[in-house]
Amino acid sequence: MKTKPLSQDPGSKRYAYRVNKEENRKELKHVKIDETTLPKKSNGKKSSLMELPKKRFYRQRAHSNPFSDHQLEYPKSPSDMDWSRLYPYYKDESTGKMTNKVTIADIGCGFGGLLIDLSPKFPQDLILGMEIRVQVTNYVEDRIIALRNNNVTKQGYQNINVLRGNAMKFLPNFFEKGQLNKMFFCFPDPHFKQRKHKARIVTTTLLSEYAYVLKEGEGVVYTITDVEDLHLWMVKHLEAHPLFERLDEEWEKNDECVQIMRNATEEGKKVERKKGAKYIACFRRISNPEIII
Image (cartoon, rainbow, N blue to C red; front, side, top):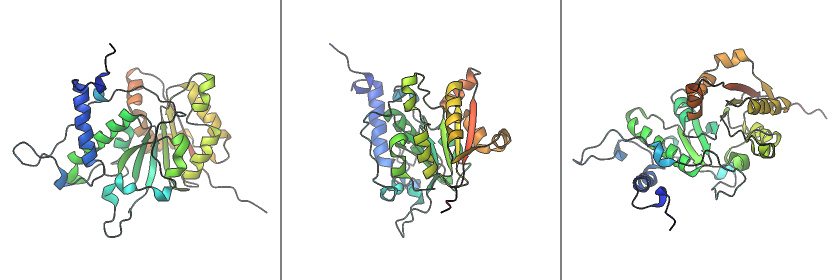
């Protein structure tokens, strides 16, 4: 008899944990967290702290096939996207409109370490993580809910969130032309086999989409990996693209985001523990060339 995975076994600790977190997520995922939403203790008083999610209960494969049908939800166009569900704190109740737009995106955000470290550094920017794996997305959602709850008096972490999405297919469905100031690609899947290179997150076609959603003359693509072959691949494609120019090492040395992304992610910390190499390259989205008729 085939046994059920622990995540599907009603008698397992993992199953009970996930059910509890799912109920909590449904209740708090899209609401504005303030003192009225704080959970209550058994004595009826408001509890100030919520336990952070435990990663061991969200186990999933390290990578996911971006070409598979993942039954994702996405808007027909950016104007159809209801951002207030992810950032309720920034919804103007009198007009029903958002007061801010997403300007920073972490593509393949993993367990959300970069989002959390960027949040206090860019309090006026809405920061979005896009992640294709179900359980990893759930973990980040639960982590953000807990952080918002635990920092409610300072309105902390209201400017970050995550959605389950495939940036290789649907990025223009979410973002308008020139909307983003920064895009991060931190330790992406290297797809070592040559026949899998088409699944890499940086290709000529995808770079044109990234150029579309990045702000002309200002938008920056940040890349970091511990795989030299992938680093050379990304640099080669970005340098060959007419709408990107590489930023020099002096710029990288002085840029706050470069310093943050070195160790903010789980992969970055793992590489640091193993004393591995980290390869960084940053590119600015240049202005569109003038068309002379």
